[in-house]
Image (tube, rainbow, N blue to C red):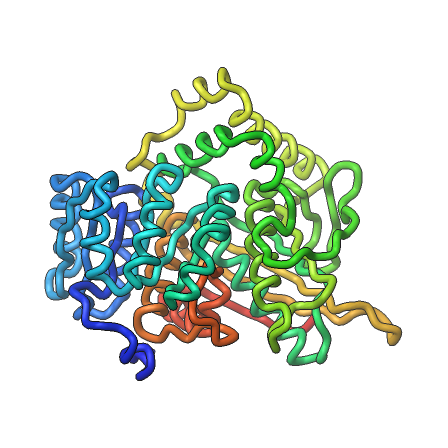
Length: 420
């Protein structure tokens, strides 16, 4: 699992770093660095990078204490406002993990990776910004043979990978395409880091037209899908015979739908296409009707905070600042679990077949993000076997396919898929 194919070796020149971790001193960045130290090969040549040399040195000492015998990361203190500095470190790296404040400097990093032939992975959850990336950099990344893997963290990575796997399982076992994937957020403790809070506040600064466009199901897809009717009742609830009672209150449902539908659009016309009328719907699992209604109201309130300046100012008094986040030890022992059901396209011979899949990880959301970022980067570095033989572009976690699945399971995640 740790050998790079001959053709990828041939097209890459030797570089100083195997992996560059940008934004390493932030809350998510430091957890990603810890995961790299604990789980990636000890001879990995890598660098931690950010604005503050002193913070990077503190992080480097912490990492050395964790695993003193492994090859330690180099320190790269850079100014993101200086394109020459950024290009200098990016062009010396094979893979870039970007955990920066995306709405401030994210586009500069993407542009540098495309221009310098460096594969890239992020957790940017800002749909208007991702739309800009797709519009401006997808074709250039394809031509450069650069993979830009977006939203590869806890709020989207498992969802996209579960969808890809469960659709494939249904096709293999029944020879049918998928009409719908229903995903349930079963266990996930929501405690924002400073970077996440900063990004959420930034999204409200877009023009109303951009915000409205971001809510459209196919905004990131290269092709338009078929609109479907709402499957919830007037309270926003839905009951599934496998997943149980669900509430349409998942905070990340809109961005996940956009990304999963991009996967659908990019795979359309290949031997992995999902189905002509495919749709993705995401919910929170709830214990009762009252809990479902409360969940809906809570999500509506959280969404409203970003729409009003007064509420935003009040919220900032209580939200963490960039670099901070929830208690690390509590996060370390807070399990994450997602479940999904795929429903086959309707047929005349009875009830449509279904497949079930689940993903779980014994540590919390930010540890799960670190898992996906580090193992996704390892997949690009050591294997780079992108699905449907694509060579690059603005891609999704699903394009890392079975190799990413194998890696996250080897690092402690649990994954199941079967017909029901």
